[in-house]
Length: 330
Image (cartoon, rainbow, N blue to C red; front, side, top):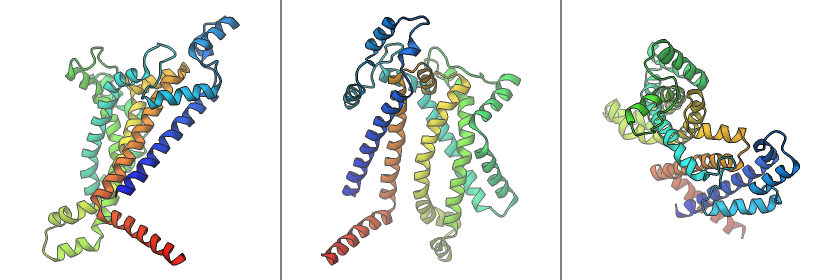
């Protein structure tokens, strides 16, 4: 297990380094940020002065070395447009994006587990089929369309909830802040819960068809007891990986939904930075998202091997088999 953790950590760091380098190079190919910041009618001297002030007039190799040095010290740089620290701005925007992501994910799990289980357990009944069809439909609808539909019904027609925006006082009034997040949370949870329910249904169908579950039932265990003792532990292993992917997807979905509802989160920061060619801000937001997605994948892989001893046995068996093959070849 220690060797696996070491190898997996090395792979994670290599992936992050490649992502950071690729992001830097792609942004430099897209164009010179100076032309997005100068005013109309600027002279050649003004353009040269702006380039020198931003540091983009230097050779690209020199800029890349400085970029890597900043990342090593966890410094995401300074915004071209407002001269604020990108790391501080991301932390401030997370006050909106992080609660939106976590609440939406928790609600989607609460929806998906019972719906997916019933859709599998009662797959031959009309309501099992209805649940399955509802998850197919919910997963096929674009998230922005669900947001527009909820705004139309609950904000414009019935005026139950605000159509968008976030309190200027941030979380000083939690009830007001949560009220602003209600429709965005429902938007993400409906789509993400439908996707997750389909995975839960597939995992449950797989467990229900296993021999060990029929054997447990043959020994006199109740259906609920057999599922709890044998089915949950075996079925949860593939679902853990799906949960990690789903949490990453929920985070990306939150960035999109923020723009539908006008929320001042990371999505708003990213789109504004792209429009203004603010390289440090774009790099900061995309790199933060990449770290989050890769970190969740790492945590899911390790958790799966802790829960399921067969994965550790498989790794050990493969290593021993490899050693035997090497000995035979020698």
